[in-house]
Image (cartoon, rainbow, N blue to C red; front, side, top):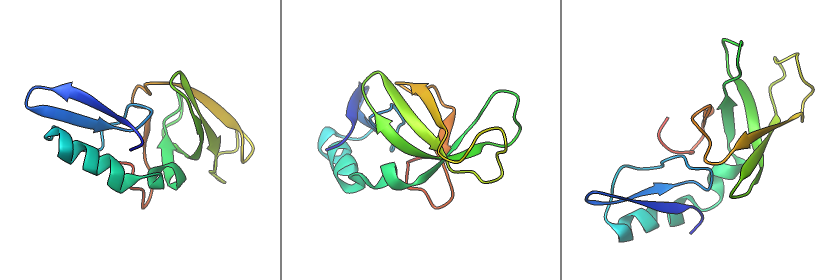
Length: 109
């Protein structure tokens, strides 16, 4: 299991290591099964990162996640303010600036 279970009334919410819910409240065994089914797949998926002062989000790839921070790399050829591979450092839990990108399985969009 890669992620966390957050206790809630009626069960648990499965979360990614960076705090994004991937399902609603479920009984504990089912919440664990959701995380087991996702495995590492969502770490390889593209994600959208919202940046201050920019209308469109930037496509990024997750590079590293620790309990304190995560690093994501710019993968957006249309974002001219930073080179491909430029690293953005985000807090964990990530406050909602990151959402699943095209075709991503990173949970609820």
